[in-house]
Image 1 (cartoon, rainbow, N blue to C red):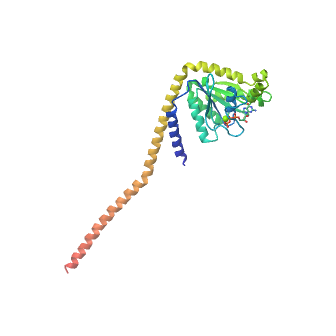
Image 2: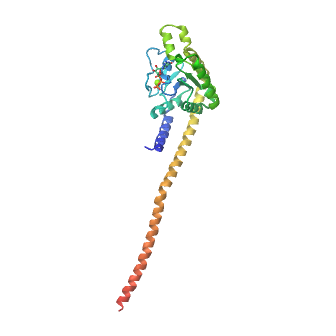
Length: 287
Ligand SMILES: Nc1nc2c(ncn2[C@@H]2O[C@H](COP(=O)(O)OP(=O)(O)OP(=O)(O)O)[C@@H](O)[C@H]2O)c(=O)[nH]1
Ligand SMILES: [Mg+2]
């Protein structure tokens, strides 16, 4: 399959998905989004109290391949596949973004956001427009691997990247899923507190309360924007296909014209030849 036909297929899928996204949850949808192995599923397990009996599957190899949802008291959590490796997985994750009211963008150190993550965050910004700073929550995981406060520096650099390259200042949280799990298992309040999970939970509770009233209007606005975007994409694709058809027809059209010219010439030649033969025939007969 060519790159272009893959693009058309993708656009067709996007349109079908858009038409099917009608029954959205009445509760705010919080989706975990980010690169493969960022710790998305682990985080959602912690946020939903699935400390030992994981609801969202986790693992050292690429684990989540389909969007998966779990409803809690105040919201609906959505796990999405890690982006950047498999195209079908990424497609799922993108449809997750389209249905999310809040995005938890999960980043795993070492290092700050890479180019691919910046592009994904630009996509989040395109989706949420003026609501981006409210709807996007950045989570840096694996705080337990911190050495000498290096993670705090990473966080500061990430905030600077977001300010300078995307002009946004979302809320950011440093968290550790494993520290939270250990803290719960051993009843250690200090450990729980320093995992960042209770702070993130409190922020999410507050956030979903504050957006409750605007849920439907923001969703409708986003849907209208996506519809316009899809229609423009469809128009562009149709124009490209039409251009290609004209281009492909070109050599056949000129070949057909050349063939016609040749036939006219042949016919003329034949008529003249026939005239000459008839004249010779006449001359012979008259002898
Ligand atoms: N040390 C440490 N390891 C973590 C933390 N969070 C997750 N992990 C580990 O990182 C690995 C990946 O975690 P997942 O939660 O499956 O990551 P994911 O982003 O859902 O991965 P995909 O679905 O495959 O994209 C697992 O082995 C987790 O145990 C954390 O805070 N600290
Ligand atoms: Mg996962």
